[in-house]
Amino acid sequence: MIFNIGLPNDKQKLFFKDRHRYVAFGGARGGGKSWAVRSKATLLGLNHSGIRILIVRQTFPELEENHIRYFRDMPKSIGRYNESKKVFKFCNSSTIKFLYCASDKDLTHFQGAEYDIIFVDEATNLSEYQLKVISACNRGTGDFPRRTYYTCNPSGQGVGYIKRLFIDRRFEDNEDPEDYSFIQSLVTDNKVLMEKDPEYIKRLEALPSKLRAGWLHGDWNSLEGMFFEEFVDSLDNYQTRRWTHVIEPFEIPIGWTIYRSYDFGYAKPFALSWWAIDYDGRLY
Image (cartoon, helix red, strand yellow):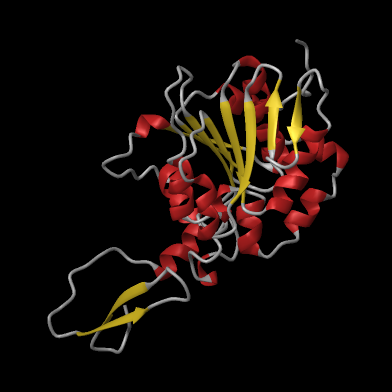
């Protein structure tokens, strides 16, 4: 069967070829992430009979706009989309299921499900807990290797989790570093977008410095909600500004006053902070 998905750019080619157990792709706005998800899911479904694929986004309208409408228009010789089941079924019996996860209660849709391949598009919009529950559905008894793919930007509630695994590569006991791969794709890698909408990069350049550093340059150290704004006043000056506010660890003298504060948070997140005050009233 001949089917033309279009021509991928160099970063998208790397994404198509990557065989790691967990792959993160993107790291900035406009890097061609959703197209890469749709295209790789299509290629996998066409080339491997009977596999089960899942595509997840935070909301159903996002699924509709970025993925489902494309599969509705697929040639019938490729497969058909079932509106009620939210499933695209290939002629070789492979399927793509579309699910959203706007809150923890939506995780009930994932209970007991098994998928050979999972794509979480804009994964950093989901929480760490949600990402882990969804990843647990990546299982089965077939011969096809299980893989989970994340597309991501340096913003959103799940950014700390994605950054720890794929950027900082700080792994816990049950995580094998050999399983994880990150492919950065910036707007400048997306030649089609640059040609069709050359003004888009100017809109990114006009953003406030912290957003510009993350969304345009893919700087994971300018994360929204992770640092005070004082940490970044420009991408080039990040390290200088960081060490204005961060110092090397030291042993606190016995005579200093120590405080502890606790914030229960609005939902699940909470914060426990320790504070030390030196003899001159400086707070650490």
